[in-house]
Amino acid sequence: MELFTKLGTMKERSPGSPEVQAWVKELQGYISEHFYTCTPQILQGLGQMYAGGGSMTENIDAAGGEGTAQFAHEAIEIYCK
Image 1 (cartoon, rainbow, N blue to C red):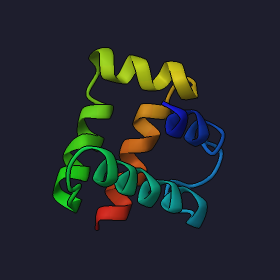
Image 2 (image 1 turned 135 degrees about the vertical axis):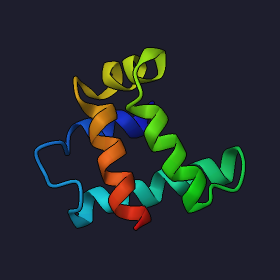
Image 3 (image 1 turned 180 degrees about the vertical axis):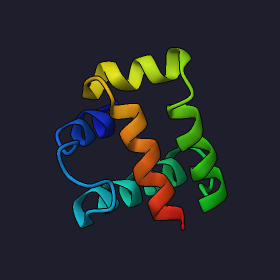
């Protein structure tokens, strides 16, 4: 959840800003290193789940502040294009 706390501090930036996109790359690397190979398609699916509501959205927003899950989704979409 530290990654989402960090992202929460960047919400005033554009989701396409270099700093936010570096965060997405860091997230993808973390997932690949600790869980499974996180392809762009998998990452995009995760982004959709982050903003899809329910406990995942609630937990991300609790870590980074309200709207962090949606912001993560938007940043991931830009990164994966």
